[in-house]
Length: 114
Image (cartoon, rainbow, N blue to C red):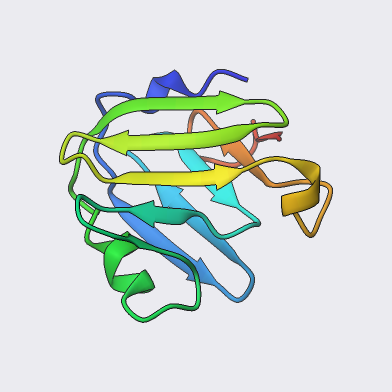
């Protein structure tokens, strides 16, 4: 699946729902059913650790430099600031058969699961 449409787009909203995370860009939307790690310049943070929500929300307003989705391997969103949101898509690292979904127009009507 190609998620490169988010490259050059700004992260406009982060939504924490009870058991998933939604990232909204200028138009596209990523919904993640597994919690990504946040790799900052000097440390990384995982879900449940102090400052996780702050680290994710601090990316609001940042522009995506590079985005890739390698089926059954990884999802990576790198911002121009150097911060990376990453998610392992290896079956043994996931608690559900679906790791997330991608909607190019942000409406959710065209969502493709991965």
